[in-house]
Length: 485
Length: 98
Image (cartoon, rainbow over all chains, first blue to last red):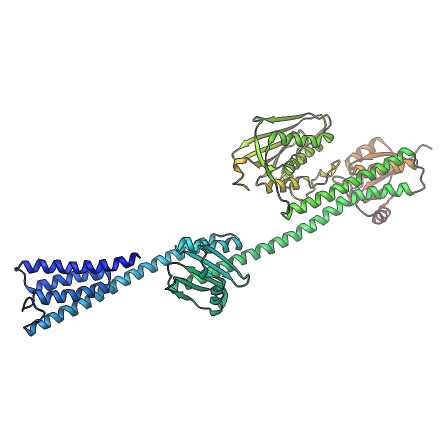
């Protein structure tokens, strides 16, 4: 629409320029005809540089007619008396057309060079963005989006042969449908439809075609499309390779964990089984057990059953947390309520032990899964209870720190050695003194760590031998919930 | 003849409970230690006829760290982690007369 208005305007302007020159020289008789011819030529050159060949040829013809009519004798007619003037007129026309052509070519080349430069710049920017994408899924979704953004096209679609899936961005145009994209893969060549402003390019990696690319909007050059196709193919291949390496690494780590789990399970499960077996053997033997001894052995069996049951439960939970199968149901919780709920759970084991709660802001809130967050606190409180004598207090504190609430549970136990501190959160780690524990599975701290990390927080411990230990963990505050989903 | 005394050394409290109950039902006096160090400490005061010692314990304990005592004491090692078969075999093979 815009273009349809611009072109006649240019022709009119060219005609106006010729008219003005003619008018000026026709009324002032001081200049000779050569000057007039050169002035026309100058104007034509100017027009051809700015507006191209079409307008300048039209202007050349108009100027030739005006030159002949107004300045070459006999003036006022389109005939020429002197044969010399025929030569002059012909030379003028030829020169003006040739000069127009040259100027237009120079102009087109400059424009082409400029366009190429812009395309190269965009390709560079595009490749940079592709490199920064993380996993393959993220990358595949980012490619059409980045094409629309960087190349300023109306819509882009990416088709992958192995997945038979199309990733789109921009307007959802029917022209960029699966048929066209699949046809491009089969054709293995670029197709540019300038009329409908569509381009299709295969994603070529060496001799393989990974898929195809469709763009609607400003038509890109063939070279750019080729580069885009290769660039995207390489980026997809690279992302897949990185993912493969990650998977192999994860599989190896999984194997290592499995064997560690088996070792730990072997010990943890056998100990209660040994107690149970020994008790049952005694009960079945003809030994002279009195009533009290029978009850003692039966209660050992009962307690060890509970211990095994808890072990199985914790091992299963650890496995679920590890596999990322635990879905957190984050909600806004009052820190005070969380601590109260945890203490309620621990009430039985804590007995008469003094508990101190240090909470400056009683309305402090966190964004967490209520049951899981309580579980972490329970693990830490039970741990503190196990490792410190019954008359010493346990202090539970919580305070705000940036987007997190830092919880800490402090005891006055014997403390943990420096070398051991870094290992206590490891799965199945058995500390030098850990086996003195009365009850416990050794999985409490790793489970607490997994839960805290699933919330986007961290857990740590500091300790001083002979003074006690402080276990701290962070959970996101409401306002930080989006930053740490 | 007074009641024979047996010293049970094991870090697992439940295992000690089973042993105490079973052995006392058979007419033995039982004293307990939860580590090799504690056992040595007890041996200075008490004179058990037999020591039952867990092989796999943190600190002093196990076959390599038999409390050397000049007095004639029977010491029997066992492995609480083992299934009963291996434990019995292990205990027999490691039994020594002091």
